[in-house]
Length: 319
Image (cartoon, rainbow, N blue to C red):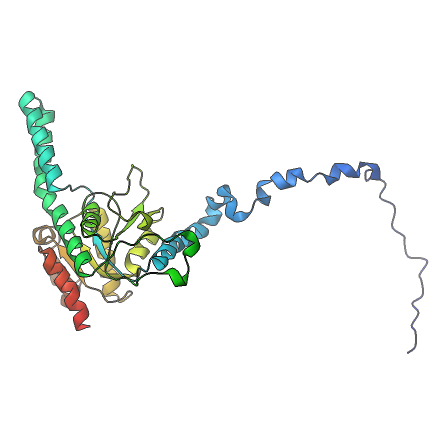
């Protein structure tokens, strides 16, 4: 092979020496990396709390809130749930009776004080509405008993593998994890000796999880949308008791998803005939043309917790 020689061009300008750089004797100054190691940018991303809580990492936080409960559900063998919605403001009959008795005693001691008269009125209302608490409690007890839901022990972390998974379990009671109707449903499941789920959420005012949820199935959310997704993702039924804005929001989202066929077919039961017929005129929605007559078949209304469970069972027998 012939060698090719490239002639050297002596006219090519040689680089000048960088005389403005520090003398090599000062290289030790640049060998110190302690500032680099302590810089926030050098922290591992998943250990950097400031980054994780930043706007840039919002997608990461959404993903984590999605994945963490899913991890626990899978390892605890939970395949499907029965969702119970309802007001956080109701109390049990026993508590309502105690509060009313105390309020009346206070009023007897201070008969002219309007504060104590108002307390009696509020306690009387709590006693009247305690029926919603007791209905949700009874419903969850019936479901948990008849579906044979156990109360499993959380496996050790190092045993969270496919070989140690229990279940699968269906019709596990799932609530928002707070007080009121949520507490009642978790309590009913607990009284049946069954596990149950609580999907709590951070609010401007303090809200703690109720004590009846299964500890390792009690979760805290920041994002309402991820929490709602977990409600509907594995639901085999939705049961809505009396409630306020939050309950209406959750119920009508479920109805919308079913109406638009954006989720699996499930039965939706409204517990509390007087409450729901008084609060929502469903027939008027049909008469106005904003929903179809057939949309009324998406839900059932009853006062009987056993009837609510029968509706759910009949739905799947007919499927």
